[in-house]
Length: 92
Image 1: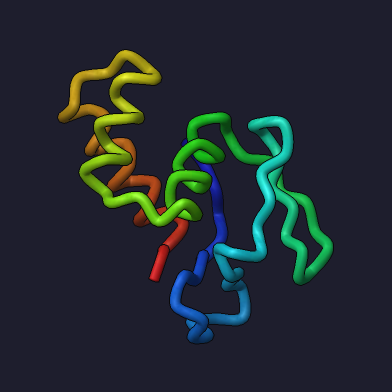
Image 2 (image 1 turned 45 degrees about the vertical axis):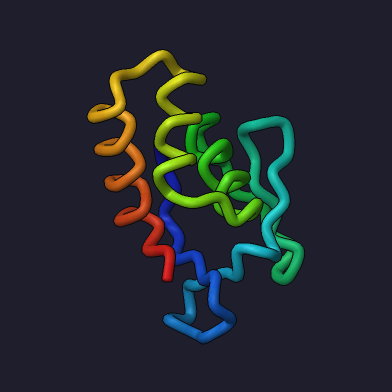
C-alpha cells in the first residue's frame, strides 16, 4: 500500500502538503484525483480501497475486517498494513 500525502479528515490545515479526504476521487482503483488542486496521484489498489473506506466513514475495525477478507490476509497482517498506511498518509 502506498501514498505519500498527508490527508485531512477534519477540515483543519495540518501542513501545506495536506489534502482533504472529501476532495479525493478514486479513479479505476489506482488513481486518486484531488478535486481541489486538480492533481492526479497514483496509488496502489489497496491504498485506494482503504481511502474509499475512510471516505465512507467506516470504523477502523470494520475496515480491517473488510480488507482482510478482500485480500485474503490474516487479521493481524491486515491491521498492520492499514496501520502502516495510516502512518504513511498521516490521516488526522
